[in-house]
Length: 368
Ligand SMILES: Nc1nc2c(c(=O)[nH]1)N[C@H]1C(S)=C(S)[C@@H](COP(=O)(O)O)O[C@H]1N2
Ligand SMILES: [Mo]
Image 1 (cartoon, protein in one colour):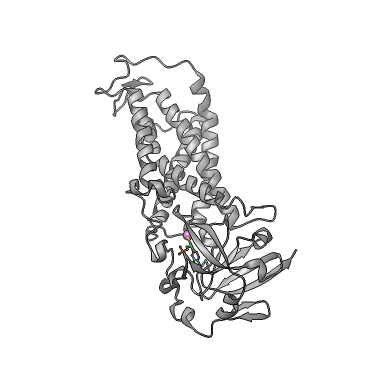
Image 2: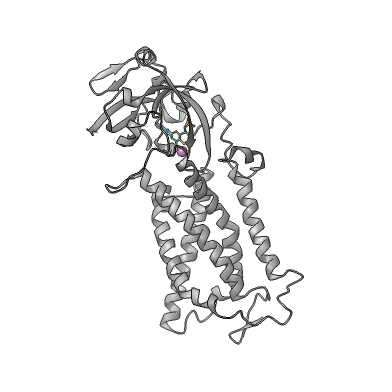
């Protein structure tokens, strides 16, 4: 194949502006959804003053975070074929003849590097393999997302006019390459993205779980039929939670397990929706948080001595929601230590990391 008067080292008549453009649109859409749902998840976990997130619909976060991980995984085959389709030009030499071209190529380099970083770090996080990441995953993944979306917007701005041009001259053999057509390649790429999605989405869509051979997590595999993210042993609370002197401290009051069991009990069906993409609905029984504290922002603190997820904040809407419980039971049985015995928080429309286990203290921060 000859392009710009030069013979390219990886000849394939399948490479064309149109192919690259179609792949680009698919990537921009999946990456765009991934970016927005990821940003939403970040805002819910680190809410700035202007941000407001409702407690209903109860399963909304489960959908947005499921989409985040599914679209992120779907970009793997798309990104692979897209890079292949422009592979010869990535190593063009000399790198740039004009300043405009130099700026464009720098932008592409940032986009490729940031895109690969996001996909790789995301997959490592889903697989919970942190050794290759010498940084805190959440912070790195968040900031590089801005880099990637910025470079993507610039790139789309530069390249969009190319797609509006009349279709490029058909290659001499009609776009055939060892029997594979352009349409075939696009269909194959779409199929690969579909297979990746089907093979993983069962970690949040239970009816598809049997197809999910690549999903690292079976949301139903764990004590009491529910996956566990951090066990009591890993959190260092095995002894603490068994202590018969356990008290839940609520402001200046202190309640024993018997006190909590004597209060009105409610049962709700709510999902655990982990940021890592797995989710599962379970039936929780316990005390309404709003029966314990006045409506307002509440800090929920674990018995866990240290660790990033030992404290969470319940915004007023969540305290007011009658489905927000301090659960004592899961699927009808007393909570397993790994699920937060003696008491764990469960609230609608909330990321798994904020469903604090082994709760020891509620503190009212402000009363509304
Ligand atoms: N105290 C405490 N609570 C915690 C965690 C933790 O590390 N410490 N992990 C959270 C995460 S990341 C998830 S997804 C849910 C999982 O709940 P489960 O283990 O009961 O399924 O618990 C949350 N509650
Ligand atoms: Mo999680």
